[in-house]
Image 1 (cartoon, rainbow, N blue to C red):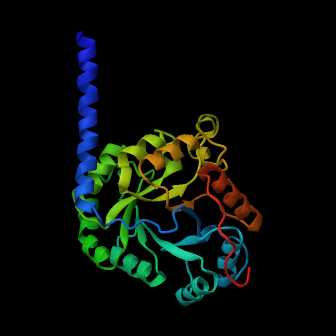
Image 2: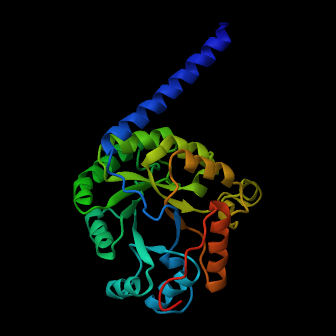
Image 3: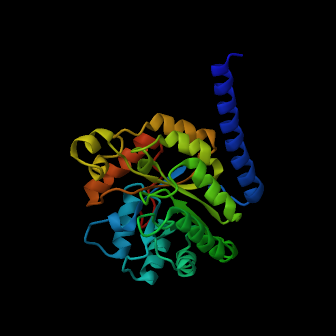
Length: 299
């Protein structure tokens, strides 16, 4: 073996060993704890605040049912009558599958809210790194914060799911895997945002490395060309399926890690019935999902 080939071999072997080690550590601390979706397929949802029709809570839930969505998620800042939500769930069959806590430090209240709605997860944004918040400090503080809340979440059957967002933190899948694994709790996993990765990586690579740590998906797009021509955030201003996400590769990666059922939630600009119908159809196209029978209120 010549020196170049030997270096290539050692580099590849080291990377493979690291990934295998991370996967084995995760499997050992979460074996038997992830509850698969019994529907046997990926289920579509949108964030509740994306619904821009002037309707009651019940009307909004029925709209989602009419358009083929089976669930939604409520943000911590959304002003809503929780009891009306419960009535809408019972009337339509559309569920609140998650509670969006974002950067709110109060994880206990978020877990309580998720439990009330019958949700299975709390989405967590793990801090932000900037000039005033050093990377290593954020790393340890956020790990400790999530670790402290994990027993309470586990007791109530709620997953604390860390999302990959543009917060200058957890910038690679290997690091994100290590961050989650170090907490050593079956209640902690990853909420993987497909579109958020496209600017600086490839979603299919993240999916395979994170593996069973991924419990739920956010669905959006990103255009590198729009980023180049119009600016960084303009990259998100493209409809699902029209950006640079390689959806066949994403589907293959999801199949490889066994993510053939679970929640996929659109996180894009919302709108009226027509806009939401377009989102539903586009999600079907990129995820190859099928619309379930229409549910609720005799529909």
